[in-house]
Length: 241
Image 1: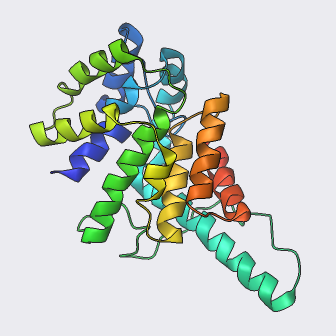
Image 2: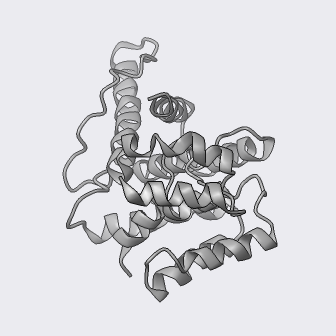
């Protein structure tokens, strides 16, 4: 399975890929875009409303795909760790400034290095987990009914990916939107940070169902409150670019 191909199909890519996907979303009855401000393209242009596809399509290039996801997650997690150290040493309130607006370079070869051209097996596995997390979160508000799902599945065949990759995406599309199942895929706080972040990117949090999904996911991932706040800050900052 070509995971890079899958990621391109979901996150979209710069240039014609994004334009083509958003145009398709505007001109068809397929729900458009699902990255909630993070990307619009490929499968992303099929899982939300046309309104969101139009709103988010122009911003897709700014996010930089998986590289940006890893950078934002690393920044949120690093700030959390720095605050822990500060609190332990000085016994003062942790810093809530969230650091600078610049996304730091991720440690090469780490679980945050999601754009590595020759990734470790752990990073490859993490990419698949993040795909599952994004699709699960995108369905949290329950707006994709059986007929819409059928139309989306038909469109998946046009993404230019092979049969194995198509089957994987369709399996995720058909799976229940279950934050507990997604949380069980995490093996560390670093992975939990990335899962929560991409889940936030996949939705707009404009329904009770979506807020409930994220709350249950954060609880199941055992994410501390300050780390969740850091992640939400990074996502909101990215969405205002």
